[in-house]
Amino acid sequence: MKYPALTNVIGGQPAPANGALLDVFSPRNGEKISTVPLSSAGEVAAAVAAGQQAFPAWAELPIKERVQVFFRYRTLLEKQADDLADLVSEENGKTHDEAMAEVLKSIELTEFACSLPQLVSGKVQEVSRGVECRSEYRPLGVVASITPFNFPNMVPNWTIPNALALGNAMLLKPSEQVPLSAMRIADLLAEAGLPDGLFNVVHGGQEVVEAICDDPGIQAVTFVGSTKVAKLVYVRATSNLKRALCLGGAKNHLIVLPDAHVEMTASNVAASMSGCAGQRCMAASAMVAVGNIDAIMEALCEEARKIIPGKNLGPVISRAAKERIEGYITAAEAEGAKILVDGRNVTVEGHEDGYYIGPTIIDFVTPDMKIATEEVFGPVLAVLRADTVDQALEIENGSNYGNASSVFTQSGGLARYVAEHASAGMIGINIGVPVPREPFSFGGWNESRFGVGDITGESSIEFWTKLKKTTIKWNPEARTNWMS
Ligand code: NAD
Image 1 (cartoon, protein in one colour):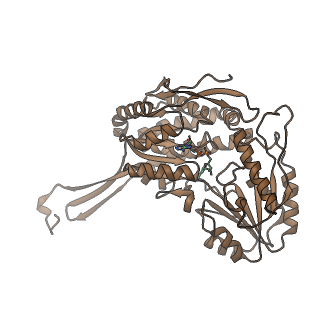
Image 2 (tube, rainbow, N blue to C red):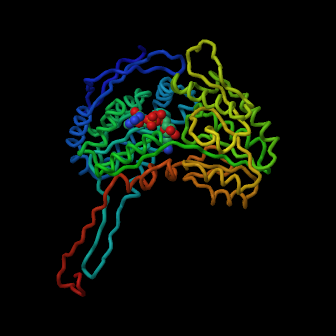
Image 3 (tube, rainbow, N blue to C red):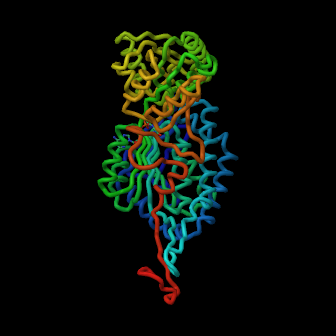
């Protein structure tokens, strides 16, 4: 194995789990690269106990002191960006450039956390003569973050720097398919000077997630993954009276109008549907072509043909994912859709056992087809046809999901109309992947997010803290009304 067998990290120490071990494979060649423990409720309880022990001293520190750890963490991320990107690329399969973009985003997220002291001053007001009210943000205690396979470095960093800088202790449950980056994050946080016990990693799958939802010592849970599991986690965690924010899957629509810039649209759409092998919750999945966009379709197919598996396109995460995605393509074909670019049955020389799928564009998909409504999570674009912008919006609005929607046009008025009427939390205008950058927060609508607020940016401050309101009087002689 290229990497040693993984353990949990509890109280700053490696902590072997008692349960079974799961093999970790590189999607690039199907080789076993490590093993990950499938932990259980006992390990969750141990991590919670470690967090509870470390929490009081950390919570007492002024935030300006706590963020010093994250200034150092940011520097370490920057210094080791290349290695961190290699590791992401190895365990997830995405290309080095894509992995590097993920690490750069982690740096940006950490910079936001470093700015938190400027944002959490609270409020003070003289509410009655001689009586002052002040509010301050206080941490919750031990919190948990459950993450998916598609961004092994960035998605954990959506939560880690903010939650910890705001004074909490954290338990991270990374995806068992990509557990290696989480170990590096734990190392870097320790190197940055984070006291032991404040960041714990418990590996595993469903059993660990359920234990997190049930453990009374955990105050808040964030989840990022599929909608099916997001719902389960949201219901279970909130029924145990925890705060929860659960981000789910996506089916992002790109609405392309006939006046759209041909080259810009074609290259943006192709990059959006195929980047990270289509395994982004912000990836273009359905394109709604309004009227005649023949020139754009032609340019789009040309762009897609330039995306070569093993060169500028990584594999999907697993053999099962490859089979599932190819199944969607085959089903769409059987239902009468037309495959313009076919990514099935590709092999990459020297990586014959890798889980590669080429970019695939399927035209004349109708709204009733499975590929029009379900999340495919591969480098596959379903093209639906509409005669008017309102018809296109009807298709977009019909989706259960609501992460992102984009419109491609050169008309400001039409762009604004689509932006206003699309039912998604993140809107792009001539942008294929409309990820809001810090300080703007990340979060979808509908079945792409359960809970209140977004997971990053200022919105996350409310999630990771509770407000303490103190009312103060020193001079009774100032009495002027019922309050003083
Ligand atoms: P997943 O739902 O299978 O797994 C996510 C996490 O849940 C993992 O840690 C996994 O171990 C755990 N898990 C899996 N099954 C479980 C179960 N039955 N009970 C309890 N826990 C369980 O998701 P994934 O395949 O790792 O990631 C891909 C999905 O994540 C896609 O649907 C994608 O759209 C979504 N995603 C969404 C966002 C967003 O911001 N909305 C961001 C990234 C990924």
